[in-house]
Image 1 (cartoon, rainbow, N blue to C red):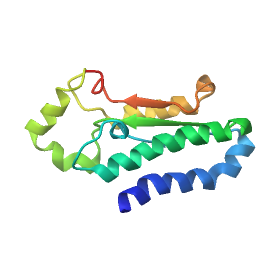
Image 2 (image 1 turned 90 degrees about the vertical axis):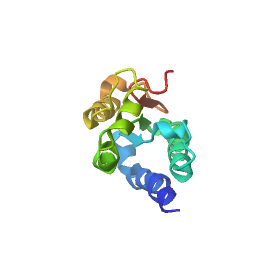
Image 3 (image 1 turned 45 degrees about the vertical axis):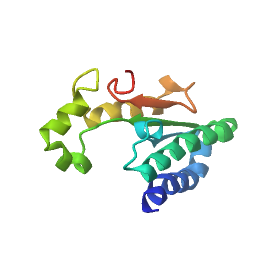
Length: 142
């Protein structure tokens, strides 16, 4: 329950809290989804469901708020080297098994996600809304 409360309900409440300011400024939201919104894993069903919900929330808000000039997008990271998975990455066989599934044979750094988020906030992406950008290093390609 906590995973859904944080990931989905928290995202919804944050979007709603910023709605008035976004409407005034014709702002942009970039939600954080996950590749597990579409690639389910049996050991983390609540996480997968919560991130699937973030994807649908992103699309629904994009349609609802478009007339106010608000763009709503999301990024869906794959395996990114963060503090939350640092302990698991110490198992080199596990790390390499995942890295080998990517086109680049590595996990991604957080900067790769930040760059996509920045782009989705820029005027250069002004036609993007309701879009979910998968940042997975090719993990889902094959």
